[in-house]
Length: 539
Ligand code: HEC
Ligand code: HEC
Ligand code: HEC
Ligand code: HEC
Ligand code: HEC
Image (tube, rainbow, N blue to C red):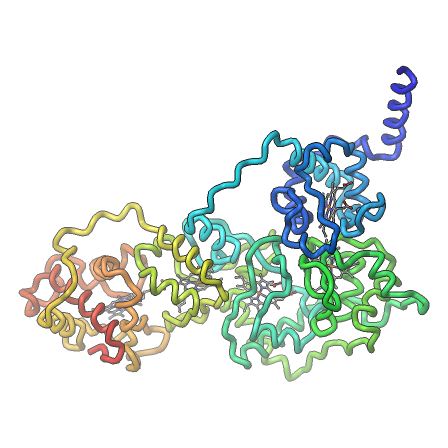
């Protein structure tokens, strides 16, 4: 007995000397953030081994980390060892990557502490009932980065996409130009792991895309290695290295492999070879938010591996930036700002730029859900003066339903009820519609001096134009139209829309007996009616 205790004490001492247990105990809450970033794609959000990448690991299923009986058999040292050195280091699956080059000893300790907590939960929480669509919509809106362009109450805005400030050293020019015109999924598990964010389609014209490309391709850091400057040992075998490092745990290459990371078969069209070699040396130096483990290889090996991914072909010519580009690049700088690319693409410490989209905090009061769903599927310009535009996210039907349900809940709780006289229902008579048309006409309130109406252009400069009133009937809630006409400044302080009915005697006296309430309702009914007959011009 005494010898056993002595032996145990000895192992502890050895471990301490080796530096594995003299660390302060790991902090499971810091460990949780690391786990989300690096481990969920395989082990799943709850640790059960069911992450989205799990089905692609051939027969090597990621361990269910909540399985208490199994996990109790592993000491903290065992856990530390497998997390640092990977499965291959302890005779287990190579598809469990080695994190020792990426995580500091303290961070490994934190992850170990969190991993322990996963299996110590006495009971797994019961599966929650499916979220009501609105709650799912709220999460989706945050993940997609809507809050980078729109204020939505106090929902926070986190950067959801890669920093583009060194893109010129990374991407190939033709790929970038084509991608901006037709974005598609590059990272199957999302840039923020397991989020549903995606690069939306800004419906750029070929010229706009050229301008943005000309600008972005100039963004390169000083001192990047030129192509070919890292000399590869001639005898090195890229294929063997690729197998040994088990890159297929996360990446597809030649149609086999994981779904946690970009398809490496596309690297040769997408990326610059010198960038890839540097990335393989230290992914977090290229992008601190990269969830790829640092392979821990020498520069020579990195360039062998890179050239293997390029099929051993000729290195690509360095990216050209012509002098003639200068003008396009200048235009690209402005476009990048106007379209608010930085709403999503910024470093975590970078401030959010000014929001370019309308405030959606009370949008449920304003828009009809049917119109909103159609707009989210296929956005189109509404406010002619805006240089920014609402991009197309390519939402699925279920996602459209969730976002619509969430936005419909955003109401102004402090709104006083409408006076009974302003609540009269629609179904207006021809007389009322005619009164509305007269009020809107040039002889009276002259709505079309600002508003677009069908095909007829408004007067004045483009920056002064207001939304097409033919959209109003299908777009706006009738009650909101009444409130807007009654007091637009209450809804949107500073708007150029005049307050026609600011006080009791402001409306014209020769229409509907000069009664403002009836005039407002007549305008409302008129707008609802012309919306349903899109060809009639605004008088
Ligand atoms: C690419 C997928 C993948 C990722 C990412 C991944 N793992 Fe694993 N992990 C596996 C696989 C596969 C196994 C099963 C190995 C076996 O049983 O042979 C495993 C096993 C484990 C085990 C059990 C080891 C044992 O001895 O049974 C632990 C603990 C673990 N992973 C922790 C982590 C942590 C912590 C992270 C994040 C830092 C992580 N894993 C990230 C795939 C992954
Ligand atoms: C890059 C910036 C940007 C992002 C990101 C963005 N929007 Fe927009 N959105 C706009 C702009 C600009 C408009 C105004 C377009 C117009 O009026 O022509 C707009 C308009 C809208 C409108 C119509 C509001 C009204 O009063 O007419 C809704 C609803 C909307 N966006 C919802 C969303 C949702 C939901 C998301 C996330 C899925 C989102 N937006 C992401 C820029 C953005
Ligand atoms: C644990 C999963 C994981 C493993 C293992 C892994 N990677 Fe990655 N890798 C990623 C992720 C995730 C990204 C995307 C990072 C980002 O968001 O930019 C990435 C990005 C890359 C890129 C850039 C791809 C692009 O189109 O932007 C290359 C090249 C790459 N990895 C090569 C490798 C090689 C070679 C190996 C084997 C040594 C490897 N990776 C192992 C997860 C992994
Ligand atoms: C609503 C958020 C959002 C906005 C706004 C946005 N992007 Fe993106 N973008 C993303 C996401 C998310 C990705 C990563 C997608 C993926 O990997 O599948 C991405 C990827 C990219 C990439 C590829 C980068 C790489 O390394 O893979 C480029 C280039 C890019 N965006 C340019 C732009 C430009 C230019 C604009 C403005 C016109 C813009 N983005 C606006 C979300 C956004
Ligand atoms: C001096 C210019 C001007 C005149 C005249 C004017 N409006 Fe407007 N109106 C605006 C502007 C600007 C907005 C857009 C406010 C915003 O969303 O930023 C607007 C918005 C609206 C909207 C909401 C449109 C939407 O789809 O979001 C309605 C409805 C509307 N006006 C009705 C009218 C009616 C009816 C008249 C005539 C009785 C009228 N307006 C006259 C400037 C004007």
